[in-house]
Length: 310
Image 1: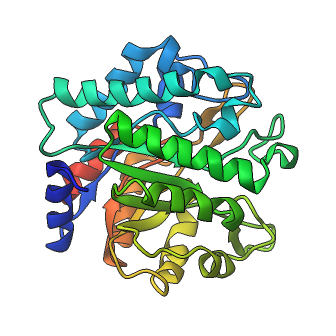
Image 2: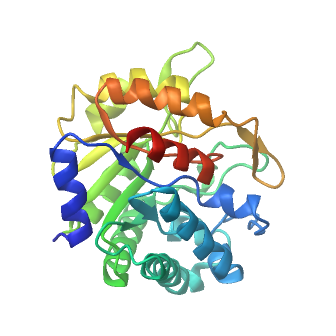
């Protein structure tokens, strides 16, 4: 099941072209004044600041993004239920997709710009840190049910593809990816990694797993594109080289930059636009075709990427 905008993007990838996607949604919303929820991050911004969210999507489209990502990263039940927001699951997901579709309609870019539904296996983090709360990880059966419910809802709401974000724990990533594939929509997978204290690349959520082990444990059959996201720029190249051993379709890179300044989730010490573009040139030389940004990286970064590769 593919839509005209996905067909156009995939044809360009097949021709060896570079596709620019959007940058951060959550940190861009906060940068513009949207309050973040203490336990569900940017999930409630869809309800509290819909016009601001639409403006973020529109600005990314005007900057040259070919894919905009609905604000659904934190709206899975694994995040909403512990935050006391489970009853708003359907509302928040449908509305997030609706707002992204409205942004595309308002910019008359339906044939060129795809709307991605973001799916993560994120759970609440430990207070004051970016580490997940181990007590909040749902049992396998519940997690699998939650992933299927969300994938189906995103598909019914009208997304063009499902973007699996921050995949890093095989026990959750595998059922999440499987659920997305059952929709028949194109599925792109973004892995997240970190450097441990010894300088070794490890899974973002499971520091007991090396990146090589993580890739061995998460099969990518049926996936249309895969890459590295929500990871520091210095971790991208070595992770891409490892991913190449497992995946032969289009590669993507959309890192984060900076760090959380708690308690407001504000990202600071963000890489400059010039340096960001320079890194992307290196990744493209290494075979990456889909580029964009994650936490901390905003509209100006995406605009410069578009200018550099188009």
